[in-house]
Image (cartoon, rainbow, N blue to C red; front, side, top):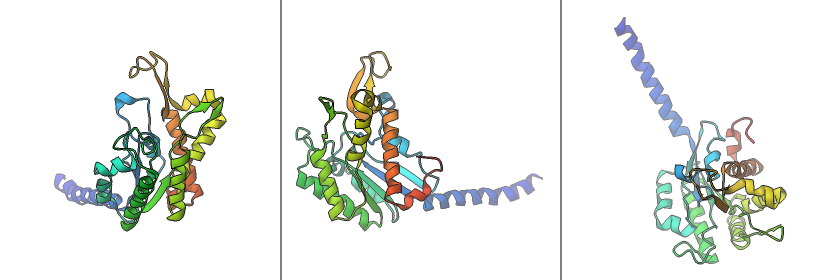
Length: 252
């Protein structure tokens, strides 16, 4: 009896392994490259959350989201540290690369990360060109909005560098998700007070990771990250990317 079971178990197990391997081979990968607003966070940083974290749950099993975004990186430092080279090594034809930088590129005091407008656009074009050479599809994203109000009005702190991204998208015929405009609209509609609920704000004693509290108008909490990820998802549909066919039913 045991021999009979074993006789059938071996090919069944082998078949399951082959099916799993085939699934992995057939998966399309969405690479996320960018800065802390998108990146995965360490446990001791919670509830700070990058929008790439909830984004991984939006797709069916044929799609794998590989979040390579990292805190503090710019188009320059992401390359200098070999992170882009590592992405290229595993990238395949048919994959996607979502490219979102700007927060660190635009700040002159961030030595080793700051890029001039000319360097910023050249770096974006390098990402686009390298992606296309691999047969993958680049998608450019403008940086997400900071919560910066002056006299009750939301300020566009990314005005210059967001426009640089738009120019590259237009000149190089790259799909664009204008997160600056979309996220500003969301924050503006919520208003100065209620928009705080999207960002990394904590009172003293509210969370053990931040006993002294936290007031951060750049990074998101879990709610804010999901709202930003949903904006990206909506634009995937709007751009009519093939990815829209793999969004989990009921996800918005």
